[in-house]
Image (cartoon, rainbow, N blue to C red):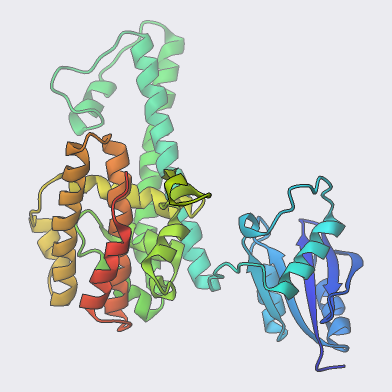
Length: 387
């Protein structure tokens, strides 16, 4: 019986794990609920391993990849599945932990589940740091908005020609005097909070730059190559790699577009004349999509190599630099074409971000020797800009 394969579905929660088993003949059985901890999990798996080879799955969620790493260390094949891609029966209105575990076990045996990429611990740590930096940027924006709205309510406006949040703007803020002592306290505290967020953001920027060294050597080469693209500096490149891992793991560029959620919705049924496309799905990685759109806004400007960009490209592979130049020319033309066709700028930029991601994929494949530049650049055509 040791040669038999048993499929185990785990419905994982903070304190408990519901367990179900499906044998090779499709008979599914609930094994009850165990505490969520290393020791109970290990005892259960050792007991089940005595009867058959195990294949285990559970949904990606707030409990992370600790369980997957524990089971892998025990020599058990374990995958973490994408919750949004689990098949759902439209008439099923009952949801319990037991039924969810049984469903996972059955679908695992049937091969109907889609596994997500599991980063190693160092890569996951860098991703956490990058996301913390994103949160800090949002906190800085909130602090600025609170201060700006407070001044607006009091009728205070910066001198004409002063750029907001520049050094001159800060000197003007420090010179303000409120008649009411309570308002002076509000102003002083708001400025202190803004200073704190600025210092926090600067420290996290430095930490991201330093900790990017934990990436594997191939991934560091990819980061160094991505900064050759116009509008992509180190923070953006590190974010892309931290969120996607190895871009070359996607066999085709459209698979990466789906991962980022920048492909259009489609409802095509009943014949070719019934095809309908909508906005992007937004079902992929939100953090990746955000930095892509931010970078894509730069391609509103015609191709030009600034001194800063020339410095980033110094000593880089000429093939990668040529791909970056081709990206700038093509993406600028795409943006202009869509704008001239009457499309709103945000929609045009999203289309540009999809093509930009295709060029990132091509550069990654080139750097890692997974394909010729000509072949990969041609594959970028799959990212045709759809408004």
